[in-house]
Image (cartoon, rainbow, N blue to C red; front, side, top):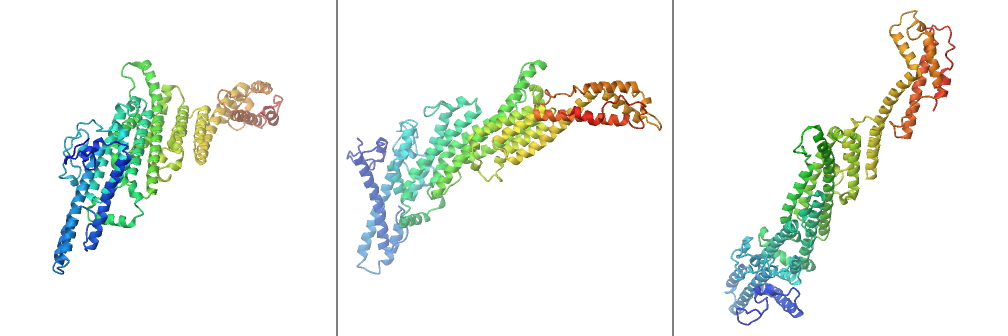
Length: 638
């Protein structure tokens, strides 16, 4: 039982604010009735004073505790004193009544203001605080004798949930609503609440990082896993944002309940019109922004550290060892870790994008409920970190593309296959990440959102395919790039981009096929004998003079040509045209390559046949030419 100053032994916290430390979080019905009666009496007192002011013609503050009201009333009464001696006594009585009401009202607001501090553990009742430190100019001169330093870090609360329930208590909501009639008390009470919540939210976050909070393991235990570490931190921050949002919404609920009372709302605006702008009370969004401001700074520091760590390409991977044998494992590890870091940065960007979208949705929902939205520190932090992560991703992606050649040497994989692996892994990560579930969740319009363009599949494919195009050496390389583009198409790459890159790869593929067919055809011509005759004809053309015949040129004598043609004709029944099974995996492309090789042989035979049967041939007997070009074409057709 609390013994009051008057010795009454009453434990009513409204009479003795320091007893609020012992209030049951779930008060009985009788206690709630006393609380309601006290608050109703305060509001009735405001109405009475307002009506008295109207009756006696006073203008000015109708509900505040400012003494200037009574000075104006005294001056006005002194001015009217000479007008009527019969009304002088009544006027003086009314003024004394209003002065007494104002004094009691001010004392009641002080008591209510003090009760809020001790009930919530803020201000002078802050745990482990030995003196009151003003947080605004309105706090000057307010000193309380109660000392809350005997309590722990959470004061009278057992845990964070207990504290949150206290802030959401109906008594607190109603008390803040009543306290609005005293602007100085109201403004400072909201400032203390915002400061207390900022400290508490930051404390919980730092505790969750190092020691664990709410039964969870310390977040920093997963620091070795950058994506998991960032995901846990953002999830904790977003939960705190939602909890604080609901708490603030509860504190300001009475404001919405009174929106229909236009007369009272207008009177409140008049009460605050006389105060300076900096003395106006916080809005719900401002209180939420203040609460989350303390968490945003350590969160941004750790997110930036993770992003910069992933963005580094890790120059020298090993400190010890020398020689090529000892450097080879380090090079392979560097190639693999570079790609892993690249994928991790993209995954972190997806997480940041998801939480940016979630926070923005929550703010838009609050704005739809006619709440004035100020800048959110948490959204600003996530936005800035998302931009930083996107920039690092772009730089890392370009660096990886520029180093495809060195990565290929260290990993014994072709550059195109490394590009395919990078595109496939990032495309799969995009599908799995919630941040890319729907591009409609973009923070801005797609045409104007730089981050969306940096993280788009179009930028990924254009960067990696363009870097690998200069390294294409085999048809397997072109096939790998095609598979990469197909993987990106399954993840949402636009058809226009697909057609663009497929066309460029097809052109490069045709060039490689032509080069392969040309080299294989040269080998085939030498094997079947036509190569010798064609070489002899070319040599003759370089030294040709009028009257020279082919039969007289070295290498083109009749017996030599006849032997070469017999060899060629014997091969027609089993053409040694290469199958290209090792060089070309695509069956259709392989068939095209064989047909082109056969066509080269046919064209060379037609050229040789025409030269041998011409006037410059000089062969009297052409019986060794057993088939004409059309017959050879029919025999070699595939």
